[in-house]
Length: 154
Image 1: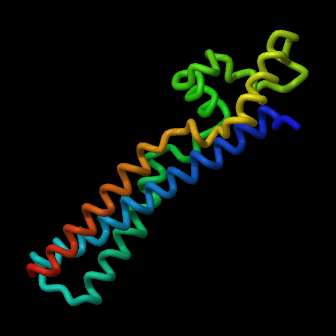
Image 2 (image 1 turned 45 degrees about the vertical axis):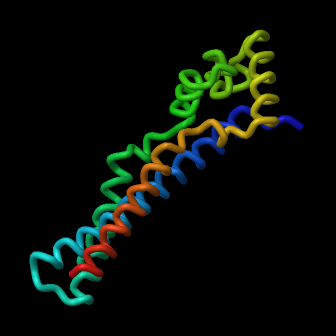
């Protein structure tokens, strides 16, 4: 049984949003720890104070990052546009996955079936961008190393 076009894109929306949330958490956790450690070098802060600063940065930074990343604007058209631009197998026809079945002509129905079959064999999440998550993970590790360096040297 082939997966319907709207289901494919719905799964893509969920996956894209989860990737944005993961990157936000990684970015902000790393930066929150680093900011509190650096601040502790300039102002005399106890461990409890550094923890509070870190939690405050995390609580403010995470929603700010998610708002700036336009998390709420990710929809089927966002996914279809991304696929049209980045995936040669789609050949610019991803919008047939967005349209309702009754709105499609015969050629579009055939193309939709081909795309549904393609995405059944090749899950959509393999083609979504993972660069922000990789960058966030790298920044998290760098921030963590910086925080521990400040703690060890200080």
